[in-house]
Length: 177
Image (cartoon, rainbow, N blue to C red; front, side, top):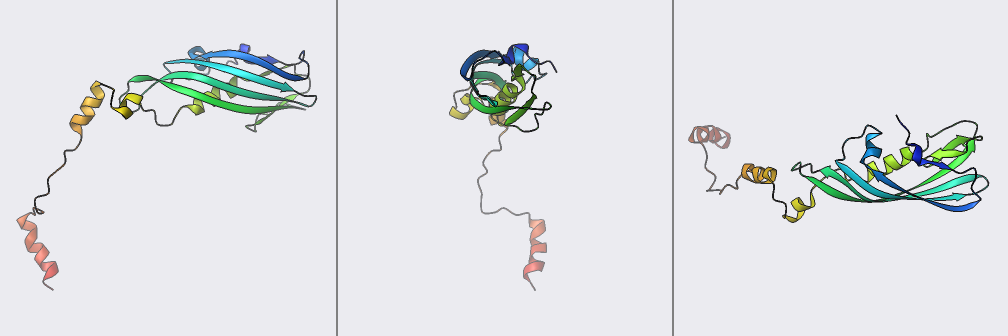
């Protein structure tokens, strides 16, 4: 998997304290991970880095939209995304990303790549059920919706339980004990 180089945050030359970085996350970013569920993506990513003598604290905030297909109608629509993630980077003997919130990188490192965290944060922010807002408020006019309505089971009027006369004789057996 290709690590997006522009998402490598160089921290070795930075003074202790807070530093801010801004990125634009587009569809090309997701495609570099082999992720093709989005038709398009346009998100602004703000990264706040708090550098201390012993660790790095990242606060990632992403806002924007991804264009996805509705699960019901397959119509594409823009799903707004607003999500954030806090990540602590500590230094150790070897690289370790087994913990979701703590990343351990070797002492000699001078930059940290946040691409994987950005990718997961945004993909997980997309609702599991993808429903076009026009489906919810009734404003979407689509071929798929018309077909679904047409094929919907019609309500039946119950005319005093019509029964099949062939079963009536068998039902008597149950009640005639």
